[in-house]
Length: 196
Image (cartoon, rainbow, N blue to C red; front, side):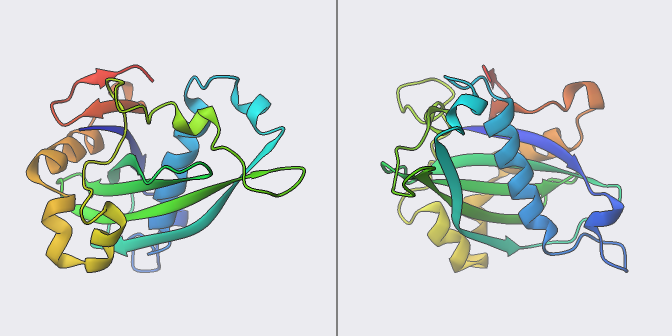
């Protein structure tokens, strides 16, 4: 399964007094991946053009915090999508440390509104461009019954399903990638890259 993947280094402002990352930093991991895929991908119509008429609102967000990450260490953030409707999409997140161990998982449901009327609007192409099932390298989440979001609320019982060995190996490779290879990318569990 392909994911949008990126590396992030835990900085001083991400940590608590005793040196590991603050639990709210897990939401920062989600936001930085979400914003990177939205702003840095080659979206149809261009991001600036789309945001002239559309508001993207985070309707709900959740993070299951699993392990601390110390100052200066890196994580891999993997993003996928589920539950696309006319006006909403859910971003799913998996975060792993340099050893491939799960750090957190969670989701954000994004609502698309018209800037003028504040009524529901179509999810813009900048979000849906990676959701065509027939497109190679699509980011559609493969966990469906129960869905990814439901599994995060179940907790430890579903962690192995959210983080199988192949995904943990991908996370480990992305977290440990040297700087010149650590750019955001769409990559699958076999380490194949797709256009971004």
